[in-house]
Length: 386
Image 1 (tube, one colour):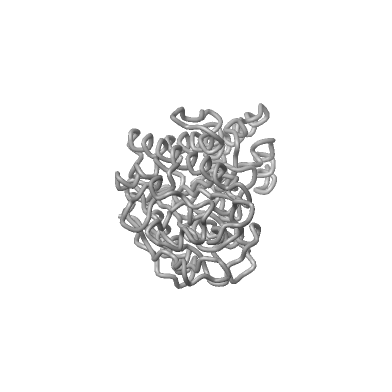
Image 2 (tube, helix red, strand yellow):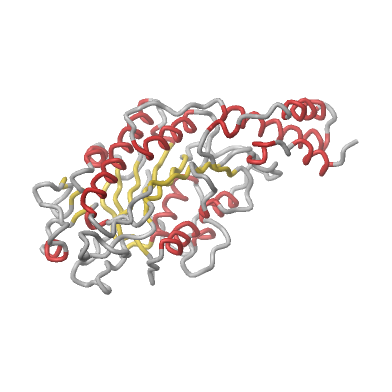
């Protein structure tokens, strides 16, 4: 007779199955009714917030950006003070449909301008510490579950944001990565035999068979067709495929590269914001047509913004505060937080007005039904979701 260690090792040691989540023995089998899947989209490189959500009514904007500033007649005005970049027609549409919340002046005390460290801070949710876990990883630990799959990153490697002792967290770039090798059939047969034995072996076998079933389900998925383009469109088509299944995921992570616009920012930033805005509008439209609008919330963030002043290369250098976006059918739309002052700068950097952990707290509370304080500390959550 196999002991438990030999049983698990023999049954879960084949090829792509190494990517499967570990068997969990925790209580709480299902995501709570009414909770949403949280989709996290990282704009890698540091998005220039001042040319994304533009304070067109502030004369200092033109003073700080005489070359790369956006002409007032091009700006998509959403209120009497601010407007969106002209390439963001998709976000303007979401704004008019009350599917978009914009949080201004996002940052934290003593900002870091290194891509690596700033990303580490946003992924861990702990600016004051050397990270040992991710903010979403801690959220998954806070509500244990026996489900074999809880979180997916559309990345080559799992991001720090999902670092956790919780099982059920994987990364993928291609659904076929989860195709079971032929040898796995022997393990499946073995597990089915052990189901009849009862006791701990049967419990382990039940969880292992659930994991195999999830792997087969993912391997059978195909990206959803839609009005998508570019690398973000490809990834969103995979996100939609995952959301259409009955996997009941709690979080999905993905990213869009290219926002480190030190030189010749205009055309590069224009293309990136168009890709972001148009793809997310198409994605939100499909979610709602498929009856999934109430079950998904999407958060768009960057590791930092750019400096208020343009540089001599027609670009912007690493900065601090920037606007973040929350979109979905259940979002309380509108502008949140105070726009950073263009007069009271910190070495040409915008001073933050909204701690990013307040957004995280609102998402944990509104999407996952969790108390954010044990996960993030004492930061009053923004009430972003109905």
